[in-house]
Amino acid sequence: MRRLLCLLLIVLALPATATGLLENRPSSTLGSINNSADFLPVREAFQLSLVESTPQSIKLRFVATEGYYLYRHRFQFRADPVDLTLGPARLPKGEQKHDEYFGDVEVYHGILDVELPRTDQRAFTLAVTYQGCADKGLCYPPETERLSISGDGATPAHDWGWRALVLFFLAGLGLTFTPCVLPMLPILSGVVLRGQVGGWRGFNLSLAYVLPMAACFALLGALMGMFGAQLNLQARLQSAWVLVPFAMFFAVFALAMFGVFELKLPHAISSRLDRIAGRTEGGSLWGAAVLGVVSSLLVSPCVSAPLAGALLYISASGDALGGGLKLFMLGLGMGAPLLLVATGGAAWLPKSGPWLIYVKNAIGVLLLGLAIGLLSRVMPGQITLLLIGLLAGGVGLFMGALEFVYKPPRKRLGQLLGMFLLFYALACWYGAFSGQTDPFNPIGQTRTIAANETAPNTRAWQTVSTPADLDRVLAEARASGTPLLLDWYADWCISCKVIEHEVLNDATVVERLKGYRLIRFDITASNAEQRTLLDRYKLFGPPALMFFGKDGVERAEVRVIGEINAADFAERVARANDRI
Image 1: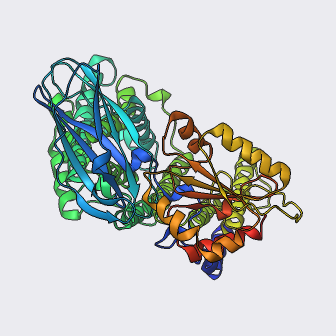
Image 2: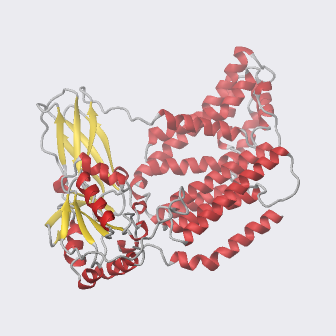
Image 3: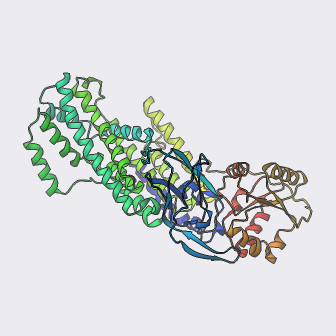
């Protein structure tokens, strides 16, 4: 009761301080965004896949996430070896976009199918180069992906990854060790096996039960994958209209795992399935198979919530065959303990006990964590950090972090972990209210503010294009105690042109930048050396504006990524001046 009261007090206290956080919510312009977490990596923003390969043509599909677009004139398709020729790419007409610096261009939002005529039947590597931007003003450097095209014109099999399949198998195995599934194993084995435990007969009967059950799960996974593909959830998953309902579903499923309510089939359906199961004869392969199909539809409350979450995840992937395989592995994991019982290994299984409740609650916590992860795409980083802290603090309180009474050694270890989680929660809340967004570093770095010094009035922009030149000018500025503004620029970046002409030339901005060393890093070439520098500063592409203090340390809290107007940038410079 004390733990519930503590958690309730924390929840009630949060709205009183939430106003300050909401005031920092990113606006429709990028002037209030100061880190790369608000943008997707290039291969998540633009997803390329090989749809079909025939002796006559190759069909590619680009999926641009909502809020991002691709340039038609930036596509390039090259074959390796170079003596293998491809026909001209067949691209549909794009959307017209006019820019005062680049003129009229064509862009693509959403799904784009590209067809490449093929005359040579040899196997080769297809190099696909593309470039796109975010609607909010961030331009990605040109990206090149390589696809292996088989010689017989057959589309290569998808690679779903053995790690994902193993994880789903382990998830199914974990669902078995919940308080409403594990105690049912002896009963289930009695119904299916009818005393025929051990030997090949028991193994065959249990396998006849497990495989149809897993097949039903696989069918559900395939259907949800097809459903997701038809709705193009893969492209729309970054939209708040999809992410928020998904997150709410996961939160509801978590409450079901915590025992707030039970998820069940309607009584009319469940009663009919119960009658079918009751009339099925156990001890035969056919009867075991029917029981396996029926039991997959009569999943218990402990299984239905995580299963529904897995189905939502698969529907977003749009991969029917991959979704079927993943849920098939989930079903095999759930059936593995029954196979162990059937072959006489029941003694190896753990006994029922209070630990089963912990497994169930842990699954609920994971579902809440997944909900927060989805919401992080549409919420400010500070709100996300606040929710992570709330989850960690709640888990810490329920582990007895504040129960200062005598406990046996095992519970004291749990209490110690709970105290650590509560301390981490406090760090997250402190970080959220002080402008931090990184859950792995919630407090942020302590910055040494140099004493006020008179800096030279360096007004001209100096352009560099190599990491060595940039490191040199940063070192020079640090040695002379001069604050520095670094502008990331490229000729192909429309927003860079806007910032150059309309923002950096604004009278107020020019006045407030007096005393700064002005450096422009030209990433037009977008070579490997320059891309490494982007990774160093955790950037996806231009434009970006970074402030470095007199001590040479970046003031990350005032970093600007994407397009910004002159008034907002002038305010950002004023904030930077208070910190240099």
